[in-house]
Amino acid sequence: MVQSKTILVADDEPRILEAVSMNLEVEGFQVSVASNGSEALKKVAAELPDLVILDVMMPEMDGFETLKAIREISSIPVIMLTVKGEETDRVKGLDLGADDYITKPFSPRELVSRVRAALRRAETPTAAPKTEIRIDDDLTIDFARRRALVRGKEIRLRPTEYRLLYHLVSNAGRVLTHETLLRRVWGYEYRDEDQYLWLYITYLRKKLEEDSKHPKYILGERGIGYRFTEF
Image (cartoon, rainbow, N blue to C red):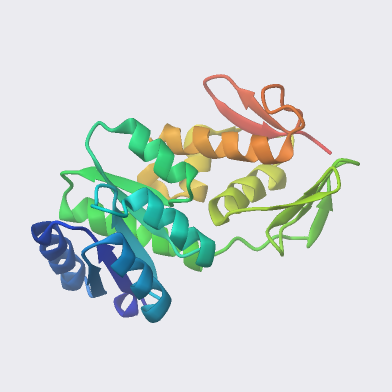
């Protein structure tokens, strides 16, 4: 049940910690707090929370450094808090392995919605119909182990990359619209967040394609969506 989930909130601003904690506790979550990155890392290891909310701007060890360290030991969902308008921060956070970001100031409703969506994605992995799917001589995808064999090299897939690739491969040859992919992979709340989709398509192409700028597996239909090549 969602009510039993523990959320770790890391921010050096006491008022933010208090506000976020209160909003989450009202919704039935258990909340743990940290005032800096080092403390957050210790609590991730000791308390094994279900999700981390991590502020980008913290002294000494900032949110990016903390996120990078978390990703070395855990695949726990991480939501970054960024300053409104700082697009580079959002892209950098997602690139380092964050699952989502929320821009300050944010509403309690948005916060809770994003937390629930991230927990949903973490809890309900898509079941693949086959363990391994051989695309061609260069690419084999093992959905059960969340990895791919690309030209003889094993490539690990992050949870969101896995979900996105699963939906594309399961509909090979068929164009899936931007909105459809966003709803299926991230959730209904993200149907207009095209940047998420573009970034993760880019990540997958870099991992799977021999030339990511001229892809042969994940093909784009301008202004419509993406399709995986038929095999």
